[in-house]
Structure formats: C-alpha cells, structure tokens
Length: 450
Ligand SMILES: *[C@@H]1O[C@H](CO)[C@@H](O)[C@H](O)[C@H]1NC(C)=O
Ligand SMILES: *[C@@H]1O[C@H](CO)[C@@H](O)[C@H](O)[C@H]1NC(C)=O
Image (cartoon, rainbow, N blue to C red; front, side):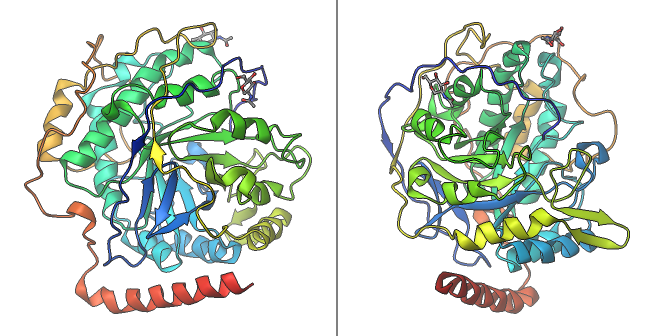
C-alpha cells in the first residue's frame, strides 16, 4: 500500500538476458464454475481460451491500520460490489483478510458480478519483517499463509495470491529480506501442489522503487522452477496524467519485454496532476499488451492519502469525482480482442548480482521451517485470523540454506475435499449461479457491442 514517499533514483540494470524458453500448457478451465477460473500460461492470463486482462481496483476500506477483512462483512461488501459493477471492474485486490472467517457471501457475490479477487496471503501480524527477516520466517507465519490459501482457493473467482506486498522498499537494507519473500512464494506454490488444489498463480507485489525494481523482478523469476513465481506485479505511480512517453511507461515495456512471465500493475493511479486515468487506454493498447496484463487502480475507499474514489461514512458510499472518470476510462477502453501479442513460452531470468542497490549475494533460499513441513501433507488447519501477537518475532534465530529444487511438489494428495477446484457451492445454490453466469455472458456481449 502507498504509505511512503517514492524515491526516483535511476535504475541501473541492463536489459534482461535471454534464457531457455519453456512451452507451457494451458490448464483446462473448471467447467462447473460460475465464472471460469483464470489461469496463467506463457506471459499472460486466460479465461477459458480468451486472454484475460486485469481491469481492477484495490480494495481495503480503512487501510492497513484498520486491520479489517472487507470480504468477511457481507453488509459492506455487498454495498461496495454494487459500486464495482457501476465501475465495470473485473478484479479486486484485497490486502488484509481473516483466514478464520467465512467468505462465502462476499466471494459468491463477487462471482455473480463477474469479478475475480487477488488476495494478499500476508497481513501486518503475519508477514516477513523487512529489517529482521530471519525470526519472521517461521512455522507460525506459514501456518497463517497456508490457512489463507485454504480459505480462498475454494472459490473459482480467486484469481491469484500475492506472497508479499512491498516488503522490499527504498531502503537498501530491506533487499536482504527478498530471500524470505521468495522462500514464502516457493512454499505457497509447493503447498498448493501438494494439497492438490488448482494451480492458482502466486507472485509478489513490489513497491514503486526504481532503484531495485528490475533486480526484484529478475530475482523472483530466477533459479530452479520451484523457486520461480508464476507472475510478477509492481506498483507504479509514474503516470501522472501525462502519456506513455512522459511517464516512462514506454521504457518499462522495453525493459520488461522478454521477462518470461505474466506482469501486471498491482497499483497505479498517481494523483499529482489530477486523474483522467489515461493509464487504462495504455494498458489495453497493443503497445503494452504483449508484456502487461492490465492492472489495479489504487484505490476504492478514500483514506487520508487521498487516492480513493468513494467516501465511506455511516450513511453509505459517496462517489467522488474520480469515480466517474475511472468508470469512463474502463468503458472507453475495453479489453482488446485477440491474443494481444503475448508470448506462449515462459522462461527464467539470471539471478541479479550484488551491487549498491541490491545486497543479496546468494542464489540459495532459506530452508522451509521444519515445523511447517507437516502442513504440506496434513494441511494448515484453522487459521489464526487477525488477532494475537502475530508471527514476526516468533523465531528462529538462524536458518540454514535449502538446496535448489527442494520446493518441488513432494506429495500426492490423498484428500478430496476442496481439491482441484471443486466448488463448495451446494446443490441448492447452483441454479441461481447458472442464471447469473448467463446474465454475465449477456452483460459481456453487451459490453462488446458498445
Ligand atoms: C530500463 O533499463 C535501463 C537500462 O537497462 C535503465 O537505465 C532504465 O532506468 C530503465 N528504465 C526504467 C523505467 O525502469
Ligand atoms: C534503513 O533501515 C535500517 C534498518 O532499520 C536503518 O538503520 C537505516 O537508518 C535505514 N536507512 C535509511 C537511509 O533510512
């Protein structure tokens, strides 16, 4: 989330070197879903066989300090989903969720509205400490992360998980925590595979920091396959009501060309010069679609930082001026048809080397905490929710390195509950869902005719 001033130092990285491409298989969509599951293949996302672009908004009323799960409160989520429908977004990102709460009402209402969710698997209590990562990477932490996976992966409109949010910032010391963020990503991917869940993409959401963005991206896509993310996302506030060239987005397309994984903006929406959201036109244009898969505008609810587009009070929701502007930008710039010039192969990057902006000097990742290994076979159990002291200081004092490849799937799932994308929606609920799916299809064709 946007809470600190952004440095604008020059990035100094060379363009990405080429690595061997890997052809990826398109995962079969889950036919029983009210919305088709979105999958990652090549450097893009897919909804059935159609290229999927994130046309989304970040959603966390109250910000991180409120520590409140907006998807656990049906009164407020239903109120806000009505606004999402007016905007025409197809995705929301939620930063803080309660893995001990039930999310059926809000997640199913989102699905009925044709909206996917990207869920941060961390929260302020259970996360990697950027300046003291070792004691924060522990079994208690991973239990919470995995419980969040268990809770949300049962919903077909769960699009992706973030394994970390802005852990690395503009203080170079924080780059030393990147190994633990990457280990968390590895562990989440292994957990999803071992538990027999559908292959929901897992990746990191990087802060808007120009001096380490390219290294961060390379790092999350280097090493053995088990260590690499499924996508990369970063926050970007450089388009301040200007254009593709002045914002420098043309250079960011150039620099990320050939990255080898799907990329999207997890936050955008600079407020410096007012906002007409020209970012949407650029993101949906062929000048970007070969490399980027859309983005999420920051943000829905108005907080002290001034980015929100609705004011929420006890009397309800009041749309601010930017609300209509964002809705207009979305409707004027529908997702392009065709494949957008995507690349059908994925490939890895070379790991970045240590320099003045990047202090990581090893390609080895920390070993998964021994106490967390059991979760791979037996599941994480009940989530701790958003109470208590959290895991950041739970220890250990030191961690050994893992051998590359140790995060590969190690178990064949023996359970069947919630596995492989089987929806938990009961038989009585199916008819309305089929109806809404039809309405959704009609809505979609309606949009295409505009
Ligand atoms: C792109 O990469 C070049 C050199 O590789 C670097 O100088 C430049 O700062 C990068 N630009 C952006 C916007 O990241
Ligand atoms: C970076 O963080 C470290 C650890 O908290 C702190 O000691 C240092 O002063 C910070 N550096 C800057 C430039 O803020």
